[in-house]
Image 1 (cartoon, rainbow, N blue to C red):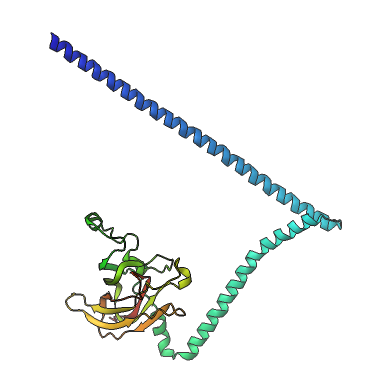
Image 2 (cartoon, rainbow, N blue to C red; image 1 turned 180 degrees about the vertical axis):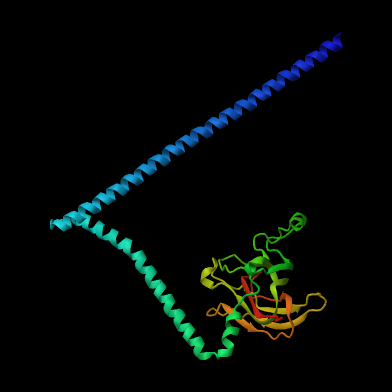
Length: 300
């Protein structure tokens, strides 16, 4: 009997504790929901007040413009302050359109001048080749991608980062294939040595490579010593057996020329390139901002 009573008491106690915990849980949910509703109501009231103020201000500005225009038409005198505000409003309305027209006109003049110079300096047979030669086959938007990277991350690494692929989460290698030159939007690695396998958008006969680094004024530290200096470029065939040296290049880090273009002699069509960075300009880490690869497609 005693065992049965004890078991019954335990069951009753368990039910009681479960009921209390559930009551507390539901009370918390109701209180949290009530506070959310109250916050949403206050936010809705603030938005309504703000909308009303904006509508009223728009009406006042429209009335003021109408009054000032009417006074000027009637030949009456206007208040100096009202006239100044009216003139400022008109100027602000027109200056945006005027600047857009000037900018478009400038672009048209530059484009026509460049096209005229190109037609004069280039033979007729080379005009089509120049147009197609400006395709960047190392662009992510075209389909280029990073296949493999050997480098030391700036922030260090561990087993978890390595398994999840987060070693270069702050400065991923794919930044080299993107057009952005925002400070920090680069492929960053510790030291000055790294190896990158790049899969081009199409197999091409590589003719030129361009490397761009940000200017000194765009960096928070006003220093561009993290720019790469000596690097080698190899062409990797589709079978991946033997890579061929295409050039041993040097980025001079000239402050007046942030993009340097290198001519490359390639006798084969390569779908992949290997970039081997060997040094930089004196910093503890290296940043590679934008890489461009130009060449010719294989004719079938």
